[in-house]
Image (cartoon, rainbow over all chains, first blue to last red; front, top):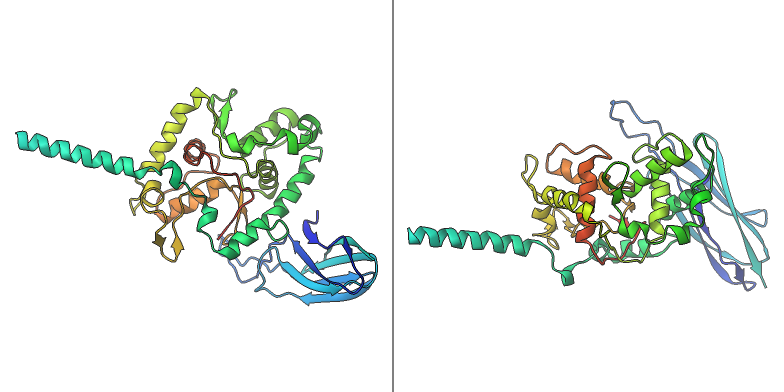
Length: 106
Length: 259
């Protein structure tokens, strides 16, 4: 069950700069910590975040072990056309969690 | 003899004044929110940036999901949580007829699970139990803490007050030593708040996760080098009962954010 909070304005004027915010629930285990039994806790982080606007990749980020749990990413886009903004988070296991939001541009 | 009696009287007066000064006056009651930096306050105030909302989101899904051997969802009996669960967190812990003891919100969710859904109880501090508790508590956000007026709770509340004021651990401190007598001052780099439970379950930046009041209380007990009570123990519920009485009138903030 993907747990993600995304915030995209529902409407925008063409050419307007809009802020996009996305947060996902993830432990972001660094791999440097030890469990109570003295064994290393294996690394489990999100490696890559991709945002696509109407099918085209417009923003991406590589994440590293220094990033906090439940990473929160905010950035801006230029509203060009009505369409779907999709978000994809890919973790160490190669699994991808996705979320999407619609934007109407007038 | 008279001098001695006078001294005893003075000592008694002194002790009484210390005890009287200890409890926080109505007008001085302040949520932990007021002691935080503006940045952390902004994090709590914005539902998109507040990481605790991730648990609320999960709790909402679990609320509508059928579970247990009977395979019914919470929403089958309780309907829309926004109506049926409004104000519940503000008056819990409440008296539980079945056990003859007070029960906290997480305990009530688990007991409902056992009796209605016939499911296995959810583990303390598990993501599912935290999510459901946070979701239910979130429905009371903004409402003032109004502890249940049930007279049967009084002995348990008194026990909670006793636990709050009892010195424990190698460092020999009580909760009251810091949170009644020295709130607003600093311990290490951090401001000592008044220890009000109005934001729980809350997202703690140090934990990088949502946690319960019991987890927080265990932290403090370990801090004074005492053996902490077990999760779900009767002592914790009594303490919560007293803390809620102590926080009467403060708004519920769940899920709050704390440093």
